[in-house]
Image (cartoon, rainbow, N blue to C red; front, side, top):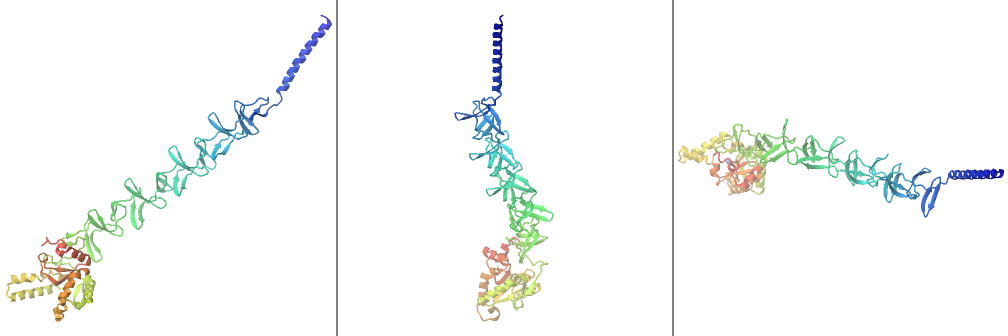
Length: 499
Ligand SMILES: [Zn+2]
């Protein structure tokens, strides 16, 4: 080979080597220049990587995260990726934390994923719904109701909503029905509002105080006594206690005083215990049998016969068939002109006499209390008078019996009967004054507790001929009812059959 040829060949080789080295050098240089940065193309923001290639997918840059679509376009606004929602601001930064948007509040976690459903924060629990929107006020979640305040915080415990108090469990669910809260028992409606006052539930009565706490045990409410059981149900009906029997009406109120129970009248003390036996009420005596029922009509009590009015008032019946009881206790006081009467009728008697005199009548007593001995002498004088007139003794006795009670069977023995006449009866003058007095009494004696005891119409029942002068004290409760009834005492007391 020629020397020149060798030089040419070597030159070519050198040139080729230089060219290859240059190409490699340029390429090396080109690949190590940072070409990253924001690019805008037709209003679309992109980001070029180190090599100047537009990125897609996630990008962390200067402490912010961005997301670029498959088309390399920077995403803004809502974006759903792998079933998670993200929100990017108008400059493309991924948002975290609370987000206010179009009047709604969202929460975006530190990884940018939108929170749904429950969220626990330092302030409390919130609920964001399936759509991520923070809920406030009432919410139905699952089977339960919750309440969230205006900041979206779940409420628990007692909470006033629209002027009604509600109770929410610790887990925020609205309480309803029976609830034990802080040692008290409450009943909360379907709406979660505690019942205050009375409630009827499954045929039981319950009562709750102003704070909604159920009453238990003996409780006084508006002047009435109630007995609430351990379960708060008001006791209704009879109750047997060691110290007596009690009765609670259908409203649960404990009975006191006179009380009608089914067919019976009963009497309960102020403390509520049922009374049995004799009962004194004012000037009247009643009797309540061993079941507590007030008796009426004819009754045998400890071997003695007693009569009671239809209203249960005991009235001493003295007639030919009913002598004054041997143990009858007299309480005699002096009325006018030295006449003795039972203390129980003195006031009424004085008022009646005064009323007559106020109408210029001239009433006087001709008899009041009489002893049995006195009665015996009256009886004898009558019999004697009839026999002197020619009647035999049997006839004279029968005739006397029409006007004079057999000694021991006169109402005058009781101090409760009076014979009242007018001035003319003893003193002459004032003709007709006895009739005027007795006419007035026949009409008005009832108003003072007296009855006109013997009338012509009832002679066959009373066993006495009409006595316009004879008045018997029974008390105004009885006398007024008797006046209305038109019955004589035997009829009124159901004592007719006894004869
Ligand atoms: Zn008389």
